[in-house]
Image 1 (cartoon, rainbow, N blue to C red):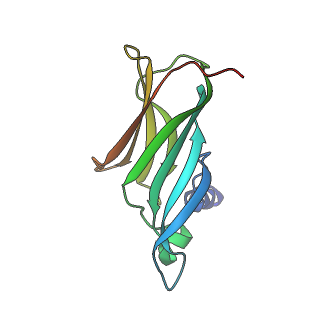
Image 2: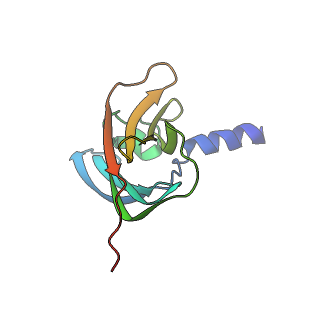
Length: 152
């Protein structure tokens, strides 16, 4: 009994994905619970020092959204930028997941994967949403050419 309660508790907690909320704007007023909104979050690539990615995505409000039971929309946008000298800490694998966040109680996630375009010496990041049964083709992509960082 305790084990199933612990599992249920884990499902009800918000996903701790390591993103920092930069800001949010309300898009739909809700009488009960938080408003629907667009959230802007930032996270650093765990294997590439000097790269920060910014995500904007919809967050469903209302009573279900406030309790973490609502399913967020699949639309998201991404912009990654070089914020310092780029250092690749370990070998990169194409399509490697660098960020993941739950966008429904159980079945839906939003994730960011990274590719390395060796020919152009560029890091490419793709954000998309998937579900256990059927994902969404909606996606967004950004690219960062690896350039020398100016030294002061």
